[in-house]
Length: 248
Image (cartoon, rainbow, N blue to C red; front, side, top):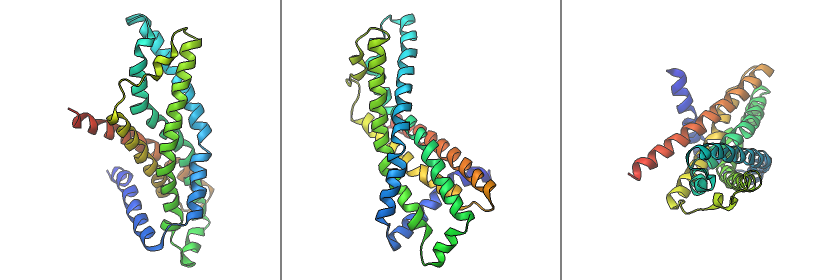
């Protein structure tokens, strides 16, 4: 029970401390821009390539199932695009980002913690929450939604190409937005922003509590990635269920 409370409560406490410190001390712009590049710029190829393969696999599976039921996978195109925009695009893009950026943030912060650089920052009148955590949180809130859009585009284009070349059907059906409405875009945006907020917070919780040596850094990195990934899945489920009830 203690681990469950810590898993859900620690990021909330971290967010509260970060907001308070940022309002008091301000957020360094240069470090924020560097973290946007670290999270967004260096994750873009992983997210786009991963989502492209993901979209191709989904179309292949849809084609196999459509042959059994309706005979033409192009009929599923609009529903596929809606599911990609609302559910799979933001969720899978966030998971890919958590795997890379979560590990990077956790490893960097845990190394600083183990080497007593965090204590040195505090002795120099710095604030770890404002100087280290806040730039990463802002980078996540900005970067993950952008990566989600790019990932969704990559998955859509790969679906069009695979459907057209491999299955000889009209791939443009997988870009049909007839079922997509404002609710779908809002759900996707909330998921992306929520995951972008949670990933750096989970990584910071794991990284700043690390004590010891190289083993502590490795354990903090693992904990950060696991917590960020599970948190993204939980956010995805929570937002989806909430909007299902709202739209009833």
